[in-house]
Image (cartoon, rainbow, N blue to C red; front, side):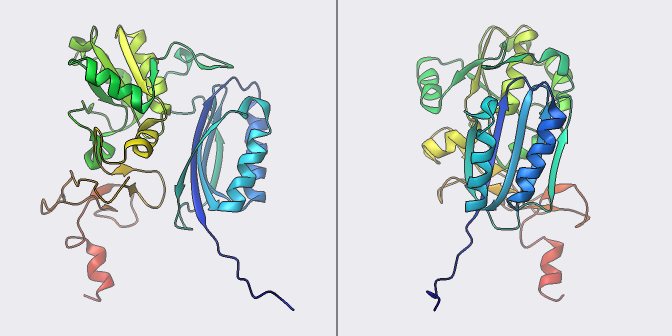
Length: 295
């Protein structure tokens, strides 16, 4: 006789990265691919001589087994895992690749790592420490380490949003002279989970910015700490099927529809539904709405 208990799948997504020397990235790639496949996970993982960067999703028990296996490798023992709720269909497939950088700024030779992490980066600030800095200094500048689309749906209040489409554009942007007036002022770099501002803070310090900070754990950790009661405004762009997420039901909508200017945080591939050009399109203007309604 069975108990009649039906197992309920609880989909979860984890985001993680770690800067640490990896002398054989291909061996790590094969191992990570095998562990993910064995636990039915999908998502994207990048491995380089500098470390690992990934986001994967699946059933919570499978994800936990994956994390235990990953942390069993001594260099990854302390890897910081950021959890969020998934939908069960967040990634189309599994991709595990070796690349020169775990986040592509186009400067692999500038990045140096040791067993403690990246070398020469900005001062790490926990969310509470960030508030302490802002409360004691009136000249702090937030510098967004993401692309313009991500910043449209959410950003720190009064942040500088560089004119970049990809991380490869950052070096020419910070070398352009636009931000030279910040070279002797406190600059706080931030990004989704912390990895891009780790690298960006190194690149900025190498180019003469003297007081650079980085938000440790990124927007994700800040949102977990302060929700929508702090300095963050809007939604967070994420790299899975959800596209955006919020930290509470009090989140502001700071972005507008590209077609009618109505407030929206809704992203869609537009004008080609099968394309890769994400655009802010409200429900009313969405061409997929007509299909859904049978128009």
